[in-house]
Length: 369
Image 1 (cartoon, rainbow, N blue to C red):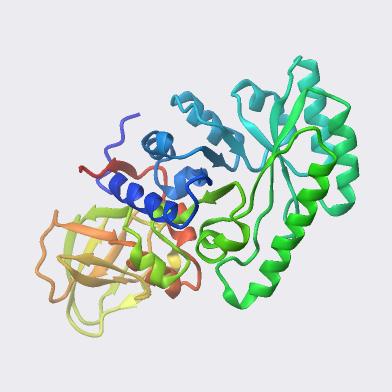
Image 2: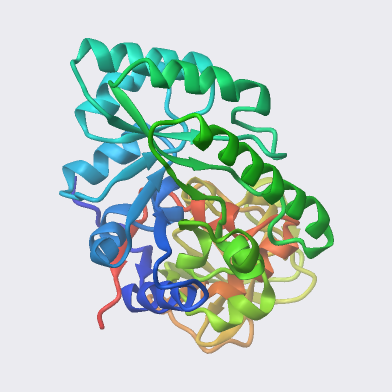
């Protein structure tokens, strides 16, 4: 179905290149890069992102099966790691030549069984260790069982071992992070000792590349939010280029007299005469209701316009008093990464939540070079 929504998310592929090269400068030339394009490419367009950088990275990662299938159907050939595979999807993972993250003995045995039934040989899998995030992963007590199970078959092959740092962006947790790194080194060494092959290793995410490239670069790093312009660090974010700009237009301008209310539940009542502009974007598009009533703001003709009243499902109203604007004028809902960071701080959340919440009904457009 053709998307004619006037609200669009503009994606700057040149900025993607710049950010990718920035993080490449932080690691060795021999270190591989896995680009994370889960959650619709962090709210952007995973297919276009993947197509654009396929020749510049070594791996992709998605959270779930359907995300990987979408990339394969779009013609992406690079290896794709599925971070959270489900047992019921194993056959489709194999059908689309995706690589599962195996994090439990049950999953390992089940995937081997299916692989044997399909007469596969050395199908690539990834082993995840839990080193302190306590979300998914094998523990030390599983190592001997893993090697025993793997070594008596040839249907699958462990090609990588990895883990996930819990607080890579928080230097106050450096001691804990270094402990995680040491634990991963110990666990991976113990498993490799008992395997017939030597899998490659990876542990660092965006913040890890920034803060722990010397301690835990290993063979590959996983670049997620940094690719899209956020470094989980104010200085780094300033250095990176803006990738996402959310734009709309003014649908109508109203004069609101003193004592008149605006929007659902009359959440705002004017204490003086003002002008408001109605914009076709709302909480169904990913604009949090918590941004209503003056918490959030947009940019119109380079001036801030605060959100007035409650955020509606499909619309917001903003205060344009004193702003020279007309119906049809452009509105920057998310002007740049600094704007997104400020709004996320006002909501006591993180930029991830704002950008991944951008609805798929909003049209995605690529910024012209």
